[in-house]
Image 1 (cartoon, rainbow, N blue to C red):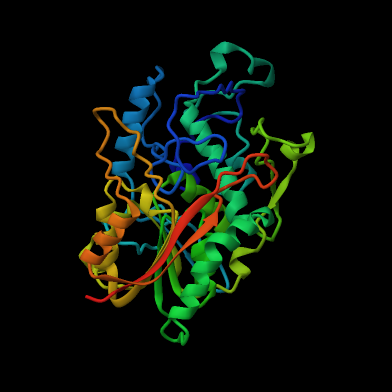
Image 2: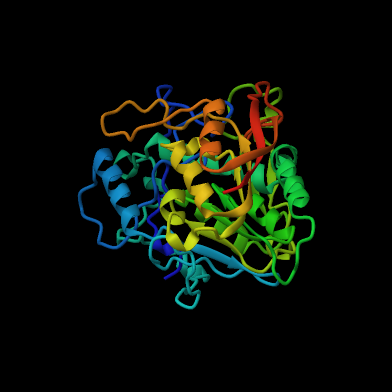
Length: 407
């Protein structure tokens, strides 16, 4: 079974879907114009359901779908990987591993690449896909939650940020200070024993890949299946730079100077990942950061931890700081860049988990409590997945720091 076959898609894209707008949803990092709630690293508070049983004749309600989604994630792996070396990018593993471990065999994975895998006239549950003349029939149209639709739009904007030439300015603002600081902190890197660096909230994997290209054994950690599926596609299946074209601003109807701005195409990736000169040992590990890396095998394992637009995705930011301190070696460094736009600050429903929103001052006090010493700190102004031609630009004054674990 291929990785993509292991997941049921959130909607059948072969059918015509009506998508409305809902102004009552809370905001997060996802967009400068349309901001929505997110669970991990910007975009996802839900995970894709896992297929494993036959689809019933009756369609579940929205609440049942959410419950199934949450239950499905608990049954699935928190530690799926992409392993890559300098010559090739190996296939994405969907094997189930014990909690906290990120090593799996690639031998169990079969990739379905033929046209028969995607051109069948029947859907996965055996029902025939409606013909073109049936698409406008209300009986064949699906109800897609707006939050799921916006997650896909958010992923498309993140493709621009991480993998398109149009996102180079944001990458220079956010990633370059981090890469420069890593170069400064580890000037004499040894190819025989490269330093290790963990990137929680790795998203689509560009920052983790750039760190690997610097000569680090780099591992990205990501919770969102939306992000992982897309990063797997880019890292493992692209054959050349500029191979794919998307229209990321097609749904942005506001703040356009010219008609052509909304309709402009963006090609990606700007580089061929497997030809970028990555260091052997680069990987992507799926799962909740605290759950995966609280394992005793991870204690004192990393020379550096890099967090970019990540620490405010926590329900409890103290747990994040504690976990970072736990997994760093004594003398290891924590490099952070990002705001404190706490993703669950506006969650008031009884079933919602708690959200702890600390000021920057208090975050630093917590870090000092867990053995960190501040070495460098400054404010960096940047955007996040911004449309560079939009008449509206939301800017963050992010906190950039380097802390060292002294005990």
